[in-house]
Image 1 (spheres, rainbow, N blue to C red):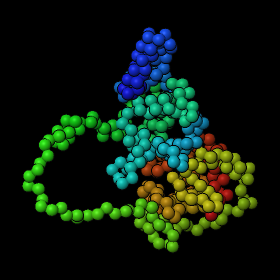
Image 2: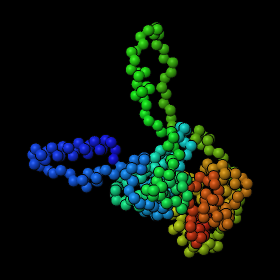
Image 3: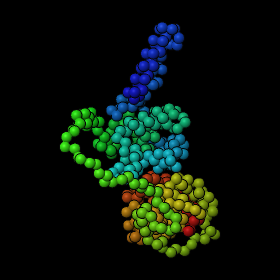
Image 4: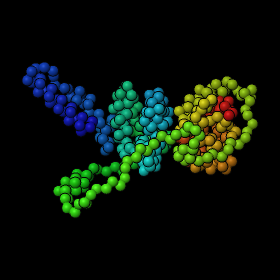
Length: 343
């Protein structure tokens, strides 16, 4: 519980006690009722309940309870918050503040999930479930491995990357004395000159008329896709395609296929099968993926199978945060499904 909430709760309790004593109305809150308010988790671990949860369990809970708003991989959907990624962006013009890039204390993650999530059903999760979700969020931010289990015993062992950039507010001692001094009223200028004026800055680039915008110019041109023979529908295993379509649900939050597909967090996957890597126009690939494509990497069955099984092991520098598809049959289905979109 925050200091403010504790003050409010204390004031309410005192007020209720006084009112009860003076009027006989109401009753004094029981210790259990007061304890129900006291659910905060401090950075030093005080308030953590006993329990534990692993990444795999967290993923299952996440897909059921959280992914509808925050995406399957914590990448955010629509205007709901993105909770993973954003590393190295805090000093840029458009910082992406996520659990991994910005939050200083893991206790904030646990406390917020425990207190306010899932949306519309807050405080419905058991401690083990909150531990598991917190572990999954750490994994989604590449802070732990997929076999990690978080508990009240190892909670403080997890170090958040941005913790050192948070410090106590010292403005009362440093800035306030400077601005509290008597104003200088000597050696003033004889006149005031206007040297600059505010200007409206258009932050949304215009794309009509085919003009190249600053944002479009910033996107590196991808090499032309290698010409590959089309995959005929007759050659496809349509039963396997149907299974692959179901399993592709894991991919849809980042990738699109079919007519009207657009690049999202990941590139469109039309024509990816048996094609050169890193060739989707208008998508900014990681340097490792771009280098692999330039070096001749072709997404055939073997390469796609290895990549989908564990993207990070296959290519350490990939932007893809997905941990991989566990079942080989599921991978085969996804590849067959991708074959049905040859262009």
